[in-house]
Length: 114
Length: 117
Image 1 (cartoon, rainbow over the protein chains, first blue to last red):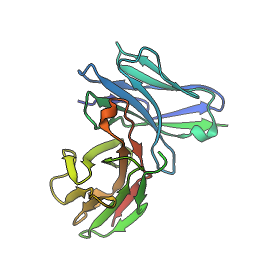
Image 2: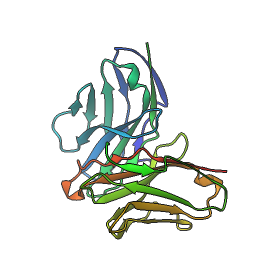
Image 3: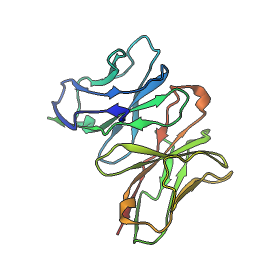
């Protein structure tokens, strides 16, 4: 079974607007961590934000915030005030319990238009 | 993700040749992970190593693939007798210590793009 599902293969957003990238996950472990990574066209993987399953508050890092809805098993990434440099592929990933492996979704491509 | 180094960045091999991919983790990191990204897909876990030990190689193909992380020097992912299906981006990540818990972030290198002709 797919552990991480990203249903949006590609999205367009106007510069300065906000965009929400969907991520749903599947686990029976009560302890897990959710990560978002950015992969620009140059190919490297850049860590953006982390949310733990026991965290009471939604994570935020600058213009990135995570809309964590535990009951719905979703961890959507919100990018506010989009910039041209935000154009990239975005991956949601999960780590379960004390496992070290990250399970990745298929990714969502974001294109920011001027 | 600054600090994880991978080389080469691009590698072209003909079918049947060997490919050697190198990864130097971030300073202070003793845990190394290798992932493979096929075109248009997310990353898939291959192997997890600590110095001189393979902890988990459950994601690695049983044949032709091997990995090591010696006491001195970089981690090496070796692919023998490459085939066209091995063409992919191979990413190395490192972390300091899984004792840091769920939030222990893996920091990725820039990847090696392997093309098998």
